[in-house]
Length: 83
Image (cartoon, rainbow, N blue to C red):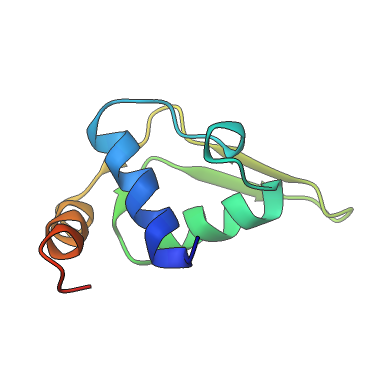
């Protein structure tokens, strides 16, 4: 699955008020953290905390995740075929 498809899948889960974590998304911790960082940097979601330790361990806390207007716009663009 390419990155835009993963982003779309995560945003759709948030929209449906379903849990979002690496197990549900079937991603490794690093890959999940990278996608979540992309969502944060693009201002599509908020209330996500990412911690990276020196030994390579990554923790993503998304229990209070909220989608922003940009996230909703991404869904609309994806569903209309413009992305």
